Amino acid sequence: MAGTRRMTEADIPGVHELAGAAFSDLDRRLGDKYAGPQPQIEQSRARYGRLLATDPDGVRVAEDDGRITGCVAAIMREGIWGLSMLIVDPGVQGTGVGRELLAHAAAYGEGARGRIILASRDHRAITAYARLGLEMEPAMSADGVPRGVDAADVRLGTAADLPLTEAVDRHVRGAVHGEDILAMVAGGCDLLVAPDRGYACVLDGSVRLLAAFDDDGAAAVLRGAIAHAATKAASVHVEWLTARQSWATRVCVKAGLHLSTTSGPVFLGGDVGPFRPYLPTGAYL
Image 1 (cartoon, one colour):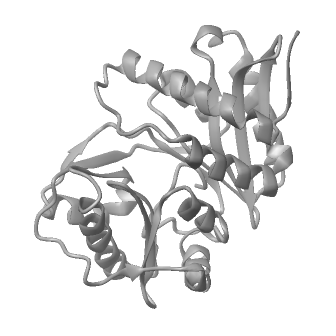
Image 2 (cartoon, rainbow, N blue to C red):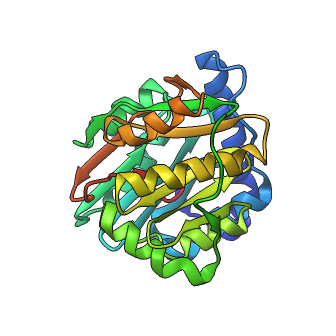
Protein backbone atom coordinates (compact mmCIF):
# COMPACT_ATOMS: atom_id res chain seq x y z
CA MET A 1 0.00 0.00 0.00
CA ALA A 2 1.03 3.58 -0.63
CA GLY A 3 1.40 6.08 2.20
CA THR A 4 3.84 8.20 4.20
CA ARG A 5 5.64 7.61 7.48
CA ARG A 6 8.49 8.89 9.58
CA MET A 7 11.91 8.32 8.08
CA THR A 8 14.39 6.12 9.96
CA GLU A 9 18.14 5.58 9.69
CA ALA A 10 17.44 2.36 7.80
CA ASP A 11 15.88 4.48 5.02
CA ILE A 12 19.01 6.55 4.38
CA PRO A 13 20.46 4.32 1.61
CA GLY A 14 17.10 4.26 -0.21
CA VAL A 15 16.66 8.02 0.09
CA HIS A 16 20.24 8.54 -1.10
CA GLU A 17 19.55 6.42 -4.19
CA LEU A 18 16.24 8.17 -4.85
CA ALA A 19 17.86 11.61 -4.61
CA GLY A 20 20.42 10.63 -7.23
CA ALA A 21 17.70 9.39 -9.57
CA ALA A 22 15.45 12.41 -9.05
CA PHE A 23 18.15 15.02 -9.61
CA SER A 24 19.64 13.16 -12.58
CA ASP A 25 16.16 13.13 -14.13
CA LEU A 26 15.82 16.87 -13.48
CA ASP A 27 19.21 17.54 -15.10
CA ARG A 28 18.10 15.54 -18.14
CA ARG A 29 14.82 17.43 -18.45
CA LEU A 30 16.58 20.78 -18.12
CA GLY A 31 19.31 19.81 -20.57
CA ASP A 32 22.11 20.13 -18.02
CA LYS A 33 25.04 18.01 -19.14
CA TYR A 34 26.96 18.30 -15.88
CA ALA A 35 25.61 19.37 -12.51
CA GLY A 36 28.62 18.64 -10.31
CA PRO A 37 29.65 15.56 -8.37
CA GLN A 38 26.89 13.38 -6.93
CA PRO A 39 26.69 13.15 -3.12
CA GLN A 40 28.36 10.09 -1.64
CA ILE A 41 26.54 7.80 0.78
CA GLU A 42 28.77 9.01 3.65
CA GLN A 43 27.57 12.56 3.02
CA SER A 44 23.95 11.40 3.02
CA ARG A 45 24.45 9.50 6.26
CA ALA A 46 25.87 12.63 7.92
CA ARG A 47 23.11 14.86 6.54
CA TYR A 48 20.07 12.70 7.21
CA GLY A 49 21.49 11.38 10.46
CA ARG A 50 21.68 14.95 11.71
CA LEU A 51 18.12 15.76 10.61
CA LEU A 52 16.72 12.59 12.14
CA ALA A 53 18.36 13.57 15.42
CA THR A 54 17.19 17.20 15.45
CA ASP A 55 13.89 17.10 13.54
CA PRO A 56 12.46 13.57 13.59
CA ASP A 57 8.91 14.88 13.06
CA GLY A 58 10.00 16.93 10.06
CA VAL A 59 11.56 14.09 8.07
CA ARG A 60 9.15 11.77 6.25
CA VAL A 61 9.19 9.27 3.41
CA ALA A 62 6.51 8.10 1.00
CA GLU A 63 6.49 4.45 0.10
CA ASP A 64 4.55 2.04 -2.08
CA ASP A 65 4.72 -1.67 -1.28
CA GLY A 66 7.92 -1.12 0.69
CA ARG A 67 9.64 0.97 -2.00
CA ILE A 68 10.53 4.55 -1.11
CA THR A 69 8.96 6.91 -3.65
CA GLY A 70 9.56 10.27 -2.00
CA CYS A 71 11.15 12.09 0.89
CA VAL A 72 10.73 15.45 2.59
CA ALA A 73 12.95 16.96 5.27
CA ALA A 74 11.98 20.14 7.12
CA ILE A 75 14.05 21.67 9.89
CA MET A 76 13.49 24.23 12.65
CA ARG A 77 16.32 26.28 14.10
CA GLU A 78 15.48 28.87 16.78
CA GLY A 79 12.14 29.66 15.19
CA ILE A 80 13.39 29.60 11.59
CA TRP A 81 11.83 26.86 9.44
CA GLY A 82 13.53 25.54 6.33
CA LEU A 83 12.82 22.96 3.65
CA SER A 84 15.99 20.88 3.49
CA MET A 85 14.82 18.36 0.89
CA LEU A 86 11.83 17.39 -1.22
CA ILE A 87 12.32 14.58 -3.74
CA VAL A 88 9.89 12.33 -5.58
CA ASP A 89 10.57 9.29 -7.74
CA PRO A 90 10.37 10.45 -11.38
CA GLY A 91 7.95 7.60 -12.08
CA VAL A 92 5.32 8.92 -9.66
CA GLN A 93 5.79 12.66 -10.06
CA GLY A 94 2.50 14.41 -10.71
CA THR A 95 0.46 11.87 -8.72
CA GLY A 96 0.18 13.88 -5.51
CA VAL A 97 3.09 12.33 -3.61
CA GLY A 98 5.09 15.56 -3.56
CA ARG A 99 2.02 17.61 -2.61
CA GLU A 100 1.35 15.38 0.41
CA LEU A 101 4.97 15.49 1.56
CA LEU A 102 5.18 19.27 1.16
CA ALA A 103 1.96 19.71 3.16
CA HIS A 104 3.51 17.71 5.99
CA ALA A 105 6.67 19.83 5.89
CA ALA A 106 4.67 23.06 5.88
CA ALA A 107 2.63 21.88 8.87
CA TYR A 108 5.87 21.16 10.73
CA GLY A 109 6.73 24.84 10.26
CA GLU A 110 3.51 26.20 11.78
CA GLY A 111 4.34 28.97 14.22
CA ALA A 112 7.79 29.63 12.75
CA ARG A 113 8.75 33.30 12.67
CA GLY A 114 10.70 32.86 9.46
CA ARG A 115 10.75 30.44 6.52
CA ILE A 116 13.42 29.58 3.94
CA ILE A 117 13.38 27.41 0.81
CA LEU A 118 16.19 27.05 -1.72
CA ALA A 119 14.48 25.75 -4.83
CA SER A 120 15.65 23.72 -7.77
CA ARG A 121 14.77 24.93 -11.28
CA ASP A 122 11.90 22.46 -11.55
CA HIS A 123 8.91 24.60 -12.54
CA ARG A 124 6.52 22.38 -10.58
CA ALA A 125 8.51 22.81 -7.38
CA ILE A 126 8.83 26.56 -7.89
CA THR A 127 5.06 26.87 -8.37
CA ALA A 128 4.38 24.78 -5.27
CA TYR A 129 6.66 26.92 -3.12
CA ALA A 130 5.14 30.13 -4.48
CA ARG A 131 1.75 28.87 -3.32
CA LEU A 132 3.06 28.83 0.25
CA GLY A 133 2.98 32.61 0.19
CA LEU A 134 6.74 33.15 0.31
CA GLU A 135 8.60 35.91 -1.50
CA MET A 136 10.68 34.67 -4.43
CA GLU A 137 14.17 36.02 -5.12
CA PRO A 138 15.79 34.88 -8.40
CA ALA A 139 19.34 33.61 -7.98
CA MET A 140 22.40 32.98 -10.11
CA SER A 141 25.50 30.85 -9.73
CA ALA A 142 29.15 31.35 -10.65
CA ASP A 143 31.56 28.76 -12.04
CA GLY A 144 35.03 28.53 -13.47
CA VAL A 145 38.74 28.56 -12.77
CA PRO A 146 39.49 31.49 -10.46
CA ARG A 147 42.35 33.93 -10.67
CA GLY A 148 43.72 36.60 -8.36
CA VAL A 149 42.40 35.13 -5.11
CA ASP A 150 44.19 33.61 -2.14
CA ALA A 151 43.25 32.07 1.18
CA ALA A 152 45.31 34.44 3.33
CA ASP A 153 42.25 35.81 5.16
CA VAL A 154 40.92 32.43 6.30
CA ARG A 155 42.13 29.42 8.24
CA LEU A 156 40.74 25.95 8.77
CA GLY A 157 38.19 25.95 11.56
CA THR A 158 37.29 23.47 14.28
CA ALA A 159 34.46 22.83 16.71
CA ALA A 160 36.02 25.52 18.89
CA ASP A 161 34.91 28.07 16.28
CA LEU A 162 31.19 27.30 16.65
CA PRO A 163 30.62 30.35 18.92
CA LEU A 164 31.78 32.59 16.06
CA THR A 165 29.55 30.82 13.54
CA GLU A 166 26.59 31.16 15.90
CA ALA A 167 27.15 34.88 16.43
CA VAL A 168 27.42 35.45 12.68
CA ASP A 169 24.36 33.29 11.94
CA ARG A 170 22.18 35.22 14.37
CA HIS A 171 23.40 38.44 12.78
CA VAL A 172 22.55 37.48 9.20
CA ARG A 173 19.49 35.22 9.54
CA GLY A 174 18.36 35.34 13.16
CA ALA A 175 19.11 31.69 13.98
CA VAL A 176 22.18 29.50 14.37
CA HIS A 177 23.26 26.45 12.43
CA GLY A 178 25.05 25.19 15.50
CA GLU A 179 26.17 21.59 15.15
CA ASP A 180 24.71 21.43 11.63
CA ILE A 181 28.14 22.74 10.69
CA LEU A 182 29.82 19.79 12.37
CA ALA A 183 27.54 17.51 10.36
CA MET A 184 28.72 19.29 7.21
CA VAL A 185 32.33 18.69 8.26
CA ALA A 186 31.51 15.03 8.93
CA GLY A 187 30.13 14.90 5.38
CA GLY A 188 33.43 16.13 3.92
CA CYS A 189 33.21 19.94 4.11
CA ASP A 190 36.11 22.11 5.22
CA LEU A 191 35.16 24.84 7.70
CA LEU A 192 37.03 28.06 6.95
CA VAL A 193 37.14 30.89 9.47
CA ALA A 194 38.17 34.54 9.35
CA PRO A 195 38.41 35.41 13.07
CA ASP A 196 35.93 38.10 14.17
CA ARG A 197 34.65 38.43 10.58
CA GLY A 198 32.89 35.32 9.29
CA TYR A 199 33.13 31.78 8.05
CA ALA A 200 32.46 29.48 5.11
CA CYS A 201 32.06 25.78 4.38
CA VAL A 202 33.63 24.32 1.24
CA LEU A 203 32.98 20.87 -0.20
CA ASP A 204 35.43 19.92 -2.94
CA GLY A 205 35.11 22.80 -5.42
CA SER A 206 31.84 24.23 -4.10
CA VAL A 207 31.21 27.00 -1.58
CA ARG A 208 28.31 25.49 0.39
CA LEU A 209 27.75 28.12 3.10
CA LEU A 210 29.12 31.57 3.92
CA ALA A 211 28.19 34.24 6.45
CA ALA A 212 29.88 37.32 7.86
CA PHE A 213 29.18 40.40 9.95
CA ASP A 214 29.56 42.83 7.03
CA ASP A 215 30.09 42.92 3.27
CA ASP A 216 33.84 43.57 3.46
CA GLY A 217 34.34 40.61 5.78
CA ALA A 218 32.14 38.42 3.60
CA ALA A 219 34.11 39.38 0.49
CA ALA A 220 37.37 38.45 2.23
CA VAL A 221 35.93 35.10 3.34
CA LEU A 222 34.58 34.38 -0.14
CA ARG A 223 37.93 35.11 -1.76
CA GLY A 224 39.54 32.71 0.68
CA ALA A 225 36.84 30.10 0.13
CA ILE A 226 37.21 30.32 -3.65
CA ALA A 227 40.98 29.96 -3.38
CA HIS A 228 40.60 26.97 -1.05
CA ALA A 229 37.99 25.35 -3.31
CA ALA A 230 40.35 25.73 -6.27
CA THR A 231 42.85 23.46 -4.50
CA LYS A 232 40.18 20.74 -4.29
CA ALA A 233 38.75 20.70 -7.83
CA ALA A 234 39.45 21.88 -11.36
CA SER A 235 36.48 24.27 -11.32
CA VAL A 236 34.90 26.30 -8.51
CA HIS A 237 31.15 26.69 -7.96
CA VAL A 238 29.35 29.41 -5.96
CA GLU A 239 25.55 29.55 -5.83
CA TRP A 240 22.51 31.38 -4.39
CA LEU A 241 23.70 34.76 -5.67
CA THR A 242 20.57 36.89 -5.25
CA ALA A 243 20.34 40.67 -5.50
CA ARG A 244 21.00 40.83 -1.74
CA GLN A 245 24.42 39.28 -2.32
CA SER A 246 25.81 41.81 -4.79
CA TRP A 247 29.03 41.81 -2.73
CA ALA A 248 29.49 38.14 -3.70
CA THR A 249 28.72 38.73 -7.36
CA ARG A 250 31.47 41.34 -7.50
CA VAL A 251 33.98 38.95 -5.92
CA CYS A 252 33.05 36.14 -8.33
CA VAL A 253 33.31 38.35 -11.41
CA LYS A 254 36.65 39.80 -10.32
CA ALA A 255 37.93 36.25 -9.74
CA GLY A 256 37.07 35.35 -13.34
CA LEU A 257 34.11 33.09 -12.60
CA HIS A 258 31.25 32.97 -15.08
CA LEU A 259 27.71 33.86 -14.01
CA SER A 260 24.77 31.73 -15.10
CA THR A 261 21.14 30.99 -14.23
CA THR A 262 21.77 27.43 -13.06
CA SER A 263 20.49 28.17 -9.54
CA GLY A 264 16.83 27.99 -8.67
CA PRO A 265 15.20 30.85 -6.76
CA VAL A 266 15.36 31.55 -3.04
CA PHE A 267 12.04 31.76 -1.19
CA LEU A 268 11.83 33.73 2.06
CA GLY A 269 9.02 34.56 4.45
CA GLY A 270 8.66 36.26 7.83
CA ASP A 271 11.63 37.30 9.93
CA VAL A 272 14.84 35.78 8.55
CA GLY A 273 17.05 38.73 9.39
CA PRO A 274 18.77 40.78 6.68
CA PHE A 275 19.87 37.54 4.96
CA ARG A 276 22.98 39.46 3.95
CA PRO A 277 25.90 38.96 3.66
CA TYR A 278 24.95 35.33 3.37
CA LEU A 279 25.22 32.42 0.97
CA PRO A 280 22.95 29.68 2.37
CA THR A 281 23.38 25.94 2.22
CA GLY A 282 20.83 23.64 0.63
CA ALA A 283 20.82 21.13 3.46
CA TYR A 284 20.53 23.50 6.41
CA LEU A 285 19.31 26.73 4.78
